[in-house]
Image (cartoon, rainbow, N blue to C red):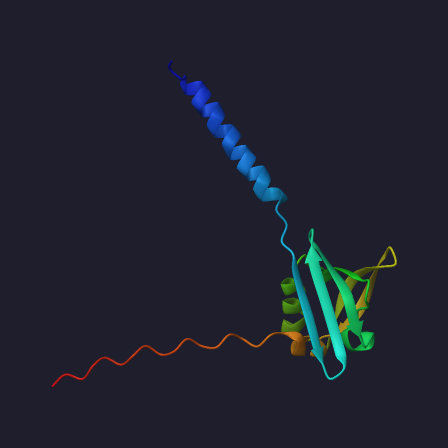
Length: 136
């Protein structure tokens, strides 16, 4: 039995489209739980939404438990890292953040200083390469 080139092409297209569909429906989730000196901030992301599950005191972070963070300074955020990076990298004292709170979208002013403390420290530098052996 011989297989026609058309059947091979159709099978390949079906395989590619199935893989593409699987890739596009994959969601990335993450969680961050930060605590220090009685303050706490817990964020979760999944399905392209960043949710605040704990923020105390709320005035320190500018968001409240139950908020869904939609945009930082007009830029959409879909992951915890995108949110923390955008807020900690800002040179401004506060940044407008759009949240969905109680079913309504609203813009809140978020102080950036507290978010800088939330960032994990950078990874350590790799060790220096060994010096070449001395030649006699």
